[in-house]
Each structure stands twice: as C-alpha cells, then as structure tokens.
Length: 174
Image 1 (spheres, rainbow, N blue to C red):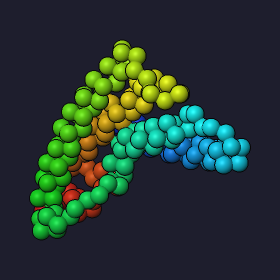
Image 2 (image 1 turned 90 degrees about the horizontal axis):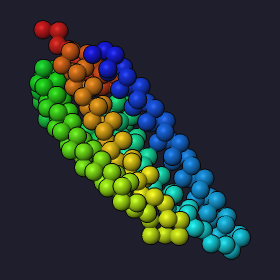
Image 3 (image 1 turned 30 degrees about the horizontal axis):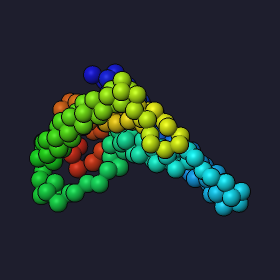
Image 4 (image 1 turned 60 degrees about the horizontal axis):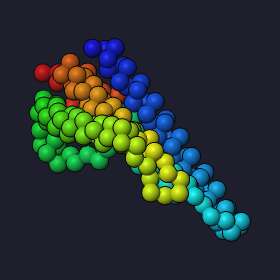
C-alpha cells in the first residue's frame, strides 16, 4: 500500500506542476492576444479558446494536488467538537463521499471525452480545435482526484497522518 500511496502522491504533484504550466501559458497567450489586438490591430483566432480551455484544464488537472496538500476549503465546525478518533472517522466518511463523487464524475467525463473523440467534435470557432483535447482534462484530472482520495483513505485507515493533513486527526495516544 505504501508504494500505491507514494505513486499517487507523485502523480498528484506532477498534476500540480502541469496545472501551473497551463496557467502560466494561458497568461502568456492572453498577453500575446492583447499585443495582437491592441497594438497590431489584428484579429486573434485561437487565443481566447486556448486561455479558456487551459484555465479549466488547470482547475481539473490541479485538483489532485490541491487535495494532497489539503488546500481545499474546509469547514471545521463539527470536527472541533469531536475527539481525535471522531475526527478521523469523519475524515474517512468525508473522503469516501469525495471518492464516490469523483469516481462518478470521472466516469461520466470519460464518456464525454470518448464521444467527442469518436464523433470528431470540434469547437465552433475559426480554430476548430478537436474537443477531445480539452475534454480529456475531466476524466484525467478527476480520475486522479479519485485516486488521491483513495490514497488519503488508506493513510487514514492505516493510522498514518497524510502530508499536509490536519494534526487534529493524528492517531490517538489513548
């Protein structure tokens, strides 16, 4: 199990790096689009699509990394009233719910990706980007998010404290 958790954590880190690269490239493309439209008075053909798809892709592909460092929004009202064992159980239940949701979303996202790939779908813009390229971010990113949830559940069940985890759910000493 340790190898699986380490491999998922590495994949999540790589997803975070890819997401950062997508955001940086979107920024550069938007700057290039401003120069083309404002200074050169020319038309931008692909830049808006690229920036939109890159930012959405970065959000989806970066989600496993955000979960791995516990960077998501967390409501801690209920856990504040629980002991360490209760907080750990609540974390397992919440992560299991996230795993089910991410699994269903990844499965449906794969269906959308596959249909766009086999159907030859393209954007309605002049660029005519094949839509399977941006749609791939959904099953890829959310599928890896599901694996990150599974790795977190394994760590919670084995009594390990996930990196970046809540010290309030550390293994009980009693």
